[in-house]
Length: 332
Image 1 (tube, helix red, strand yellow):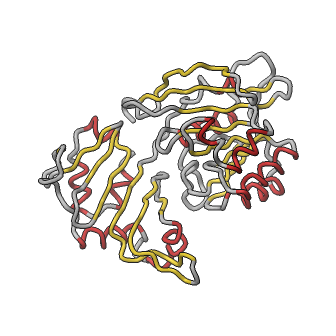
Image 2 (image 1 turned 60 degrees about the horizontal axis):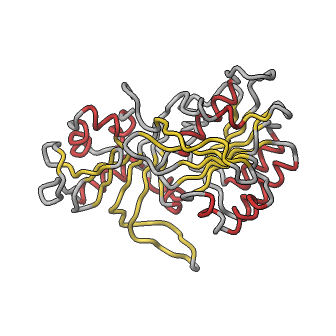
């Protein structure tokens, strides 16, 4: 899983990360690289700094500090030695690399007429490690099935950042596409359309998904969600549309269009719980009109586990908080 990460790291940093203990490597979630400041790794609910010999430290004083040359080489590798071709990614503040890993960047923002033109003097990098966890959604999917329509419910997944909602969403898309589930009605795989704005769900390279997202799944990669949903409705006749991190008014409009067209939607949104997302006008309108008939709430993760609760569209709890594995398994 880290092979794609090593390819984008300068030798100095890849050498240090490769020396981490195997159990830490398997659990890595983030590698934080800041010019002239301590190299940091995050795994589970812990963080540590990395020494010049690859040891883990609780305090930063003796940690390795990436140099300016390290950062210059990193951005060169990230851009495949052609920074000008990454202008759109730099404007968005992140670059997605092979394997679905996302590299967040920070530095000096250059504005043009009040809008972000690009970021230069990049000195901060957050490498977020993407992992595929097949069957993580198996305990959840039965609660989303809609026997009357022989389909699935309109579903919203809610959680704070980094609690596993994208991992869960990816596996739901895969399971729905395969249709491998014994239920009380004829259940076959459905046509799934993924609008993958951040290239994280399918991790496409040259348009081909790196992850197993199912045999009946089509992907629109690196496309804004609202526009992408409308394109998929017009062109791919999906049964289900899958999108990550909704929140804009345009997103809500496209979700309305999909639902009115008889298409089921599975989406995610940032929030601690239902009360939290009701504070956001766009999401409140969708929920108060009961457009989502299933709401999944992921609780804050402890180590590799996460708490999952499921509600119907009127707020009745269908599944009490249940702990499930949301992190790397052995061999992962």
